[in-house]
Length: 139
Image 1 (spheres, rainbow, N blue to C red):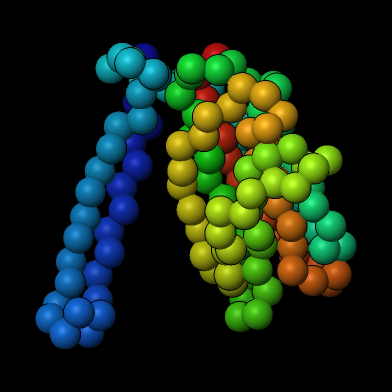
Image 2 (image 1 turned 90 degrees about the vertical axis):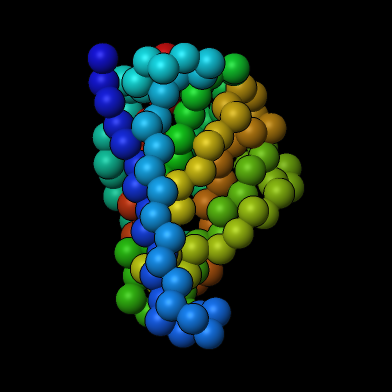
């Protein structure tokens, strides 16, 4: 059985006026079980040179009612460069869920089952930007 553990630690000496230190860990498991997720796309990097929408993960390619986790990271060091992350059909108007600015990353669950749930990426500029990505999923 594969075991994948995600950990996040947040700390700040001045965010709330007092010191802040939060940490949590989760073992990524298949839907409704304690069995570890055992499929991955592998860590990849995609180079973008135009600020047009890209269908990074196709919802039709993964099974509904299964566990999927998406990791994305903007490798840019230019503060004004960001990727818009959206969910929906890239041929229509996907719903924006947020922006990943330089150095930002995210890990989120994903309900993949049709084109209405595609993971879409749009870079903010026409100059080269690189997105690091990984999908951990249940086949």
